[in-house]
Amino acid sequence: MQVYSACAAPCFSRQPGVAPRVQPPIQSASHGGNLEAFLVSLGIVALAEIGDKTQLLALVLAARYRRPVPVILGIFVATLANHALAAWLGAGVAGVIGRDALRWSLGLSFLAMAAWALVPDKLEKEKPQGARLGAFAATLVAFFLVEMGDKTQIATAALAARYASIAAVVAGTTLGMMLADVPAVYFGERILRRVPAKTVRRVAAASFALLGALALLDIG
Image (spheres, rainbow, N blue to C red):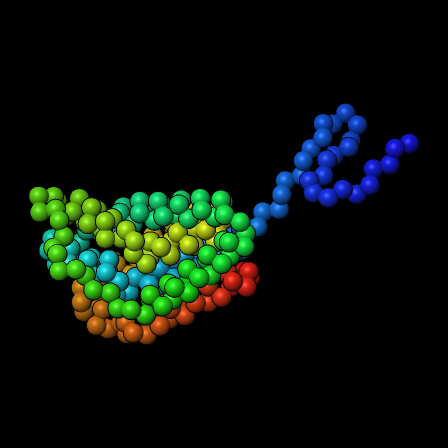
């Protein structure tokens, strides 16, 4: 009688009449599930967006067109498209590089984001393009372009690399952007004057630093 010893992964089933079956590898990218990914993404981006150049752009567009609904819809569509692209790229990188490289990349990226979050943003003097476009189209184009390379877009890519669900991350970051930008569109600089921007930047920086430390320690 032939005896089979315990085998290391991947193991094969040896039931009579059943073809050998490879056991799937353990998934290591869930990090707490979709709810955690959604809530962390929402909180991080909502804090990081306070005083960000895209929020300042929302103020400029709202004052220029004085049509809040098309401006808000333009912000939503631009953010959804931009962050979906960023999350897809972030998840793609996470699937290519090794676990240790991913851990160090995420940790250092989040720590860099923490330092960046402490720096106040300023919108460039150049006026948004799209004089011949309506409020929605002009907002869509301007917001998408300004968000390219912004810290909220980079944060979205890093969050998607850390968590398993692209959809949960994009939903969280998009909602976080809307929570920060919609009041700015409707109430303008009045609401920004009531928000302690320096305190918000410090909280955002502390949140990024915590994510960076957890990534480096491989916790969560």
